[in-house]
Length: 471
View 1: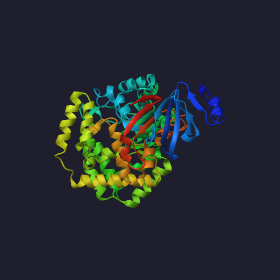
View 2: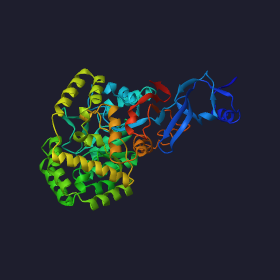
View 3: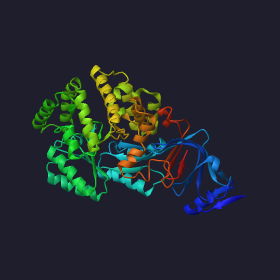
């Protein structure tokens, strides 16, 4: 004999706690039996039974407390691990238009159920965001920034394949206001400020965004230092870009030099000018790195709640050398043929190139700095910059988690960067990021424990997107 429970949460709750050892049938539900759950905030709980209904988590009980009828749709979770669906908080659907149509599928394949698009033509990105809204069980949620808001000359101006048209060059505060008003009509979820902005433009972006309830993420403009940008209200920083320039003992001299280069380079293509400034200053900054100054800057970032999206796998490209791995190159087979062929050839060419001594030192600085950011209790979110730098959509997020773990951040804290932290960033912590009753059933069943080895996030048995099962 079993109970046929037609779902109403209150009735279900009453039945569960009043019927002893009877069998339970949850109509139209999916039950995951005897699985070990890893909630990023509550930790590991062994041998749990999870009931999913209408795309949400209906019930969580210790398996010993509930006997399921064989009439249920049951997934056997024995010796497996359940984590929340993952986020990649730095992606670009518009970077390679030919790749965009399969990016959502690739994200889901690798357990990424939500993404944050950080720059591209709004028409392209919105197309895929609208698709995700219309098809919430077969595509990851997409939160978008629209085009990069840049000064003039703008970096991603479409001048070459390495600089596709991802940005808008803005020459006045009036142009900024008009652009943000337009993006608001397209329902962007945040804005992204870029490196060639003047201080006046940057501050105007943040003030305008604040009035509209939009967060601003971005790179530190080359015309500013990190402290000024954070104090102006920058909500989050991508790649810790240009942080090293402010952490140098000669930071004031470097800023003066940058401003002169920007003034002299108004007729140079934006990407070329930016690259010249980085080349002229990054080595000087690392050679003059000042630990005390870095600590004081991190204290300000913490005080201002300026979140960090390190894209560490990207920033340590030549040290990690993911492009050499067989698993990585095999992932190219899922890409359109023209892209796969190009990425394969480039990866093979890169294997013949070795990192310079400065590049190794610069990579090490990034690794050390991310751990300092974590120790300073500044919130971190996992992001990749896919599909830049041959970072395969989906798989690259797992490389990012491994890179974060290698800095010394505990695995449970690394999981937070791709689950609870992004949910909190978007004020969705009551809906996503944990394994709790009432939350959306965006879940990942793993064959091994990621708390023991973060690489186990790649051992995916089943992906669940709002209650839909993908094996």
